[in-house]
Image (cartoon, one colour):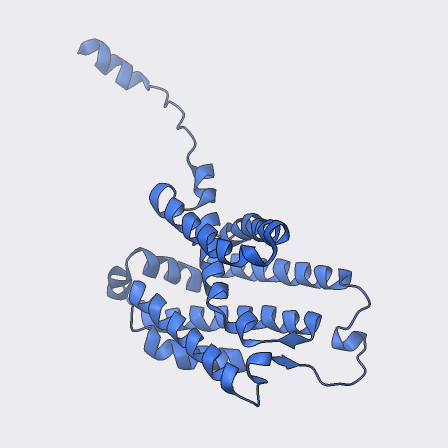
Amino acid sequence: VLSVALAAMIGVPTLRLSGHYFSMATIAVAELVRVLSSTSEFLGGAQGLGGPAMPRTVFDLSFISAMPFYYIFLAVLAFLLGLTWWMERSRMGFYLRAIKDSERAARSLGVSSGRYKLYAYMLSGAFASLAGSLYLCMFGFVDPESGFGILISVKMVVMAALGGAGQLFGPLVGALILVPLEELSNSYLGGRGAGLTFVVYGAIIVIIARFLPSGLLSLLDRRPARPRPSTTSEVASGHAD
């Protein structure tokens, strides 16, 4: 609830911007929050914040192994994908697609673009908050860099762009490629792989922008069209010519 309220507070002024200006504004807000949380003693400062020192049970999502968390994350992922699929086919989904194609045309047809963009912004805040809450329950600790680091924002954008932004399974496909790639680089290079991660992300962005702006899933739509059978009238017209 707090995340949805914060998303509304941030979205009202930032959604007046568009394109790169909107992206820069949201990144600036995330960086501001990271700096403020790093200097706040109440939030643990740069050292981060851990859970209270008290016995934990299964009701606190405390397990002996990490395996139950994988099933919890899988169930949450399935739920969010199902909710997004349903929303795509609802009136809000049609409005958002119209705004994406041409916001001016959508407004001329009576769509309140500002309100529905704010709805989408608040909904994405709720999704991110749910993921962050589960992350905190699993590790029992969070610091400013893992919660508000610039790499988190870049990673989300690259995942969506790599798989296909605006498609249901686009970010999922991007995550299935990007996360193992990051883990392999960190495993083989250790601490030296931190800087390489930025290089890999930058290279992926350049390649996608140059050769595949619609993402990998767009390749599935590039099927060769079947030749259309000629009708009798077309054949007769050809003989007449």
